[in-house]
Length: 150
Image 1 (cartoon, rainbow, N blue to C red):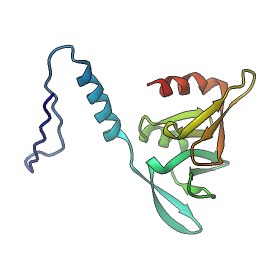
Image 2: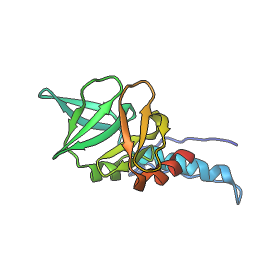
Image 3: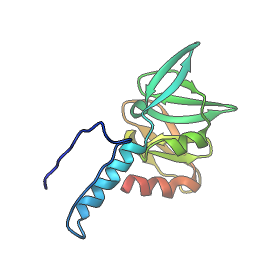
Image 4: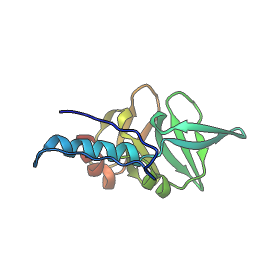
């Protein structure tokens, strides 16, 4: 496979063209990867102790609601950052690495270390590099497993 990138100031917006033989499975994988990278928001405005902080979405373990507020949790910070977006807005703007796991939580699937399955109640997700945990409701469990499989 040959890869070529051309830089020009003549285009109004970035354009990606992939030329391949018919039925090329690798081209479809490349297309999905490019769409995932280009569609995700990379920085979120967070607030803690009156200070505005710009958080890389790759550093976020999960978002959760607490009453009217939405918080972003990272592995490195003990206390979460308050964000101004609503959970449904975050769900629409974040990349495919994030999955809704309950009415009040969206998590980053790249940080999942384990899922303790409970057939009668919510399952417990543990994260790599953190003591923080979240629950996956039964309604969202199959969707999370499907995303982890992709």
